[in-house]
Image 1: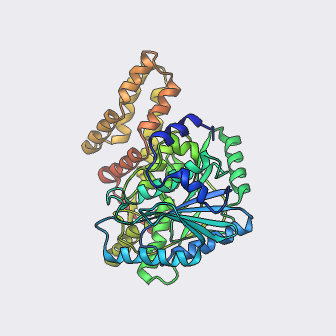
Image 2: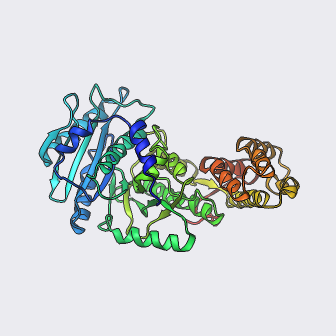
Image 3: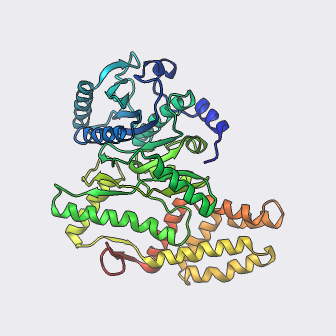
Length: 437
């Protein structure tokens, strides 16, 4: 990752989420410097959080690293009493485990303390009357608060590694979670092969199924299959947005984080939109190491995400005995579209318009709804304007192709795949022969 100190300075000066006064906080931390930092949002997580702590402690001990875990305990004014009680129970239990506790502010329960010799914890409080989060910002703002806190510590030398990890409370990390060789070898292998900067990594993962009922177990299995099916299909068609969009499996570079202005402040899908921004400035690469274990629980706490998706799949399996996903042919259609855009932008400008018009038929297949969608899409991404810039000498073809991929981003890609299913190919059930699980 090419360092961008200017972007980091600008971000810290203008775009960080408020949490605590860092000038006071950094003097209160149990250790003078940390090797790595991990961020975790906490919302009704007392059932799982301490299992995560155990796994992080084991991983820190194995590599003899000093680790800082930054958590944001949060809820909002509309949160049920059960969430508020659960957060209180988590806080009380955590205080019983930490030694040398110091409070970071006078108006909240933000604190820091030591869990083990290799492992310290900062808890930022967004669950007191003066610090509650907006329900519209939720987990996105919680992740941003934790990451921004770590960026400040990195800037002043308290955290050595420029790579921050993001996970969730219902995860169990493997023993090699902090293995530098895994990251280094993956980065070198990628750069030697493609010469691109890596801005983020994703850990392999699976959803645990022990203790779940049969429908939920099956739903969890189907959800894992879908989560891998979609990015693998995007990878096959050479889309730059072929990543696993889970906030619990991320490792990202601080300069890249600052360049895209951090996590979006959203109640859900903050991980997808964050990675969508990162993919426009560099490569998101998968790591080759032991997988993270994620709870396969059913949960309706957020409007999107793992828990709600598993609940939706479980319901579909119970009612229809199937779960339908994007048809494989929709990705072939996407491949045609990406190839068309590349050919049009890289060909001689005099031939570009004719090539565009002649090839669009293979994508829309004379379906009026698909034609409307594609032409509206071309308008939204200003494709014709990009061609005109090439003709006027304002952009090189390669610059125009990069701009196309920035405009036709992960969200537009998803909309294209959905439109191809809705108007042309339909959907297909997982495990029906067309798609294995």
